[in-house]
Length: 316
Image (cartoon, rainbow, N blue to C red; front, side):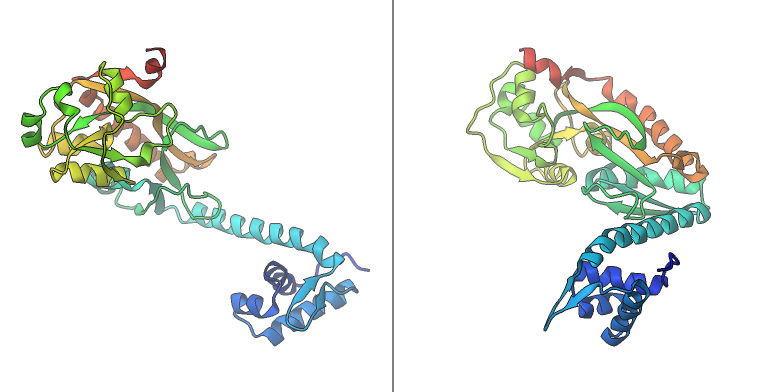
């Protein structure tokens, strides 16, 4: 039996049929007729000199030979697809796909990215706002801004300063709830998007940081996205615990105030992420440098707060 590889079209037909265990579904995926797909698989079996499928009345099953071949063909086509995506990113450097959480995109990136775009008119920016951790190999992503405690040893990572939270509310509401003690009776807004943090950085933790006991029966409006929680605070729904980059624009423009000078520092931070090696691309490097500079440019926003690390609460 020759070691010469069979045609890639035949192997592609086999891979799809083995994955679906259906000639009809595989043909539909590859946009060919079932007869054409069956012909490709039959030619592959003749090339091998052994059947790869057992044909049943309304289904197919892999033979022992088919089971041996299936993993390698799937891995091979995945590797080809990844190589193609990589080379496309290498030659098409005027397009930069960025992913970030919806809150950071809406409240921090979108109001600032115009300056970067104006300075780099040759770079086409594309954004994917999602909390899902997109895969650099499968989702056509060049850069990710991610918030959390996780490290990414397999990626190029630039961590920036740890973030903090503090209560924010409308100026009118701040007149009514002008002390932390009164705040206990205020309508509270809960940002559930940071519930994954350990130690937790939430209302009970903030009240503990200032020496007050949070009432266990306290209820309020819960939001799964941080920007929605802040928008609710702007609308006067209640008081939210806001993260620094998410509240900065609304506070600086007077829609919200942060009346208490105590902030709780999270054991988490934002990171600039890309594939290792991609940081040397001019467009990726330009975005990284801009991101770090913007973070430092707004560092003064923290100057008016006493910042208590949440990790210190464990000893209280």
